[in-house]
Length: 222
Ligand code: SAM
Image 1 (cartoon, protein in one colour):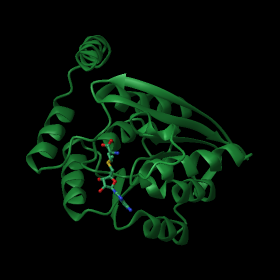
Image 2: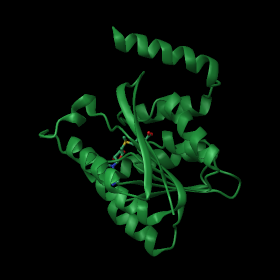
Image 3: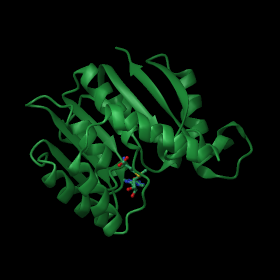
Image 4: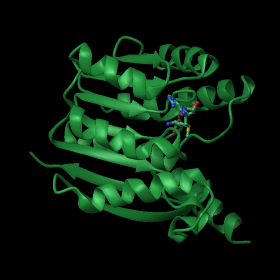
């Protein structure tokens, strides 16, 4: 079916554009071994994050939702020598796996995973002066997306890039009466974006090895 075609085409593109990556293979094996769900970004989407961060010249990246650190590694690889990345994750088990993976990838000294509910960690980051961030990737609990956007606006520098994943919800995002609080979180997030003069954004639907999905890409102005 369609899903097979999407995976096959992803496989073909990746065979041409994504060099063999034993570190990331080991990371995905470690995640599976630890029982983490395979809800990390797809390899070509990970590379998109890497490319966006690199195009931006991002030097202080914030990620909300670490899981096993797969997307974290892609993003952190785009950092310059003195660059930093902070990733927020509330499952202790995921934090342990992610820290191991970041060590394996040689990125331990550029990255920090903060354990706890992201809304608390965001307040702590503001308090300790970790902002401003120039690249923010939102990929955690979707009901909190409106709050994450408000925090992103607070913690971003002018020109910061913002990416939010999984905004399609299998197409249910168009259902205003959805009972799914993730759908409602995305819809409130979209409403905030629509009313927010400080963000220029777009949203794209995607297909591929992870199925049908989509993301929001935006830039924060001054
Ligand atoms: N960005 C990861 C990647 O692509 O490799 C995938 C992240 S996964 C989709 C979402 C993660 O957010 C999960 O690991 C989950 O435990 C975490 N999470 C969910 N709610 C959270 C919260 N309130 N605070 C911090 N992390 C949370």
